[in-house]
Length: 194
Image 1 (cartoon, rainbow, N blue to C red):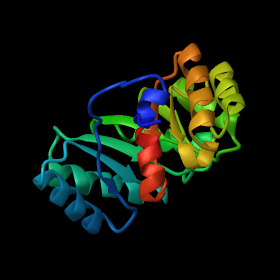
Image 2: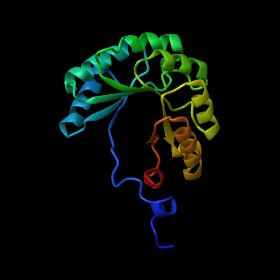
Image 3: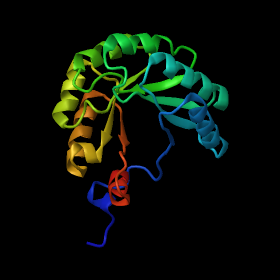
Image 4: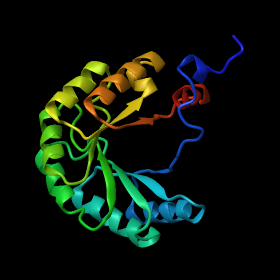
């Protein structure tokens, strides 16, 4: 056809996108050093992987904050690590003063009631990731008030057309979304950018 894929999908949505590094789960000093390195080369947002014990996660955040200062935005990805609502809420209550932008998937993916309890009680926005694979999942999350945001990943939901369905449900429900990735190839990453 001789036209870019974004034209086939409805046109240019934005001329540029924001990217941010992911800090993998490790010992607190290692995570702090990696965070400082990324901030040193210009990162203003960090996605921090957590989800072991709440005490160790808090220590990780203290060391990261000390290394990068207060102006850097921190986005936390718990990857279901706090398992249930009680554990998640206990951990979240200890995050005051850390300037956390959002918390991703704090409880088990199948525990939508727990996710809803966390979203209702937490002052920090809660994002669903592993709980949301399909448009039907997005609708259920919206109806339950189980999250404030969604992380849509092309490889998780089945490609561009399924992602568009998920986005349509999220938009109708007033749920902001990010388009994440999960280690796809450069072709998969290019598809996600579209």
